[in-house]
Amino acid sequence: MEKMEIPKELKPLTFIYDLNERELEIFLYLAKTKEQLNADELSEKLNISRSCIMGYIKKLENKGLILKKRDVRTIRRGKPQYLYYVDNTKVREKIVNDIIELAVEVRKSFINYLNDLTATAWPIKKSSENGTLPRSTRSNIEIEQSNEA
Picture 1 (tube, helix red, strand yellow):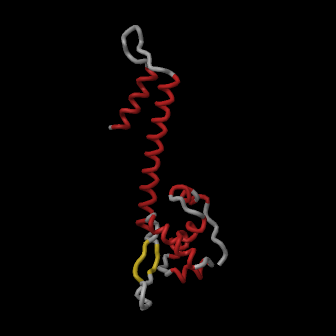
Picture 2 (cartoon, rainbow, N blue to C red; picture 1 turned 180 degrees about the vertical axis):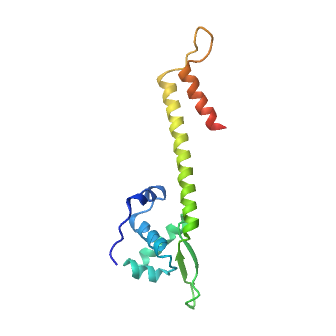
Picture 3 (cartoon, one colour; picture 1 turned 45 degrees about the horizontal axis):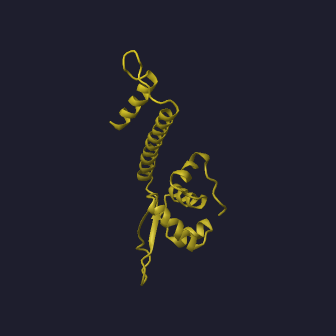
């Protein structure tokens, strides 16, 4: 099988989960085929060495993008064999939640950065007339306080 083309809409997953193209390719293959495959089968179907497949699988599993279950088709002594698969419903929910969580963190960091920048660029001065903060400073503080709530 030739290397799978990664849709541009899924490229952000490489950033969010720190995946390389091969890891994303394995994830997409399992998600699209809806098959449960062991490492040897994945290696054969994707033309990737078994040792590389095992490293990629471990990372995808640790990120919660693929699941595994014991392969009862093979009975061997020693280490058990596992089947790897993607539960599309669970992984869709996980990705959406992770994106929302990331967006909230980015927003908080950006607002804190802007507030720090504003505080150093324009020191807070109380209005001499009524002792209140200038309007632009009040809105920055209100943004910060609303995020803490």
